[in-house]
Image (cartoon, rainbow, N blue to C red; front, side):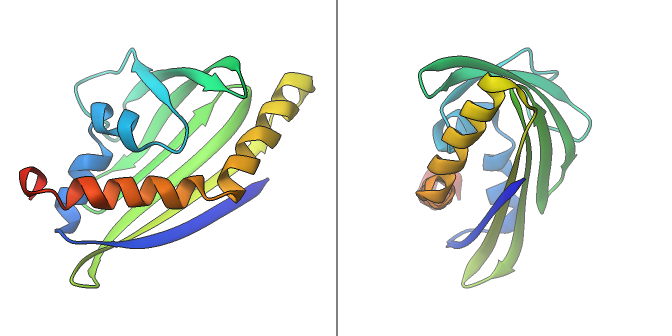
Length: 148
């Protein structure tokens, strides 16, 4: 299992950052890997909610069943199960003239040729800075006047 971690400063309150992190439409804009949210229970990502994600990785259509483990004013934690497993954690803390946002994403292959190939592709994206880019998009969107 590979794990990638990063952090950034966001010029707004932690609660505002978590509002952005739990908005499914916003998630589609900032996610490290493009996807569509389907079959979400409710209008936001909330503790205990479930959704289905669909997208393309390395030219292949993929789907994931997502379970939101925790979502509150400071933290979002989710697990996704598909051709590989994902554990993603985002934590927003007061700091650096606004919010210090920490992110951690762990990837684990579920085996099989497709699972191993897709795991390798996603690990390469993360190693190339996809998580850093996602946090930059979150910071930019959260700092917009409409989000403040």
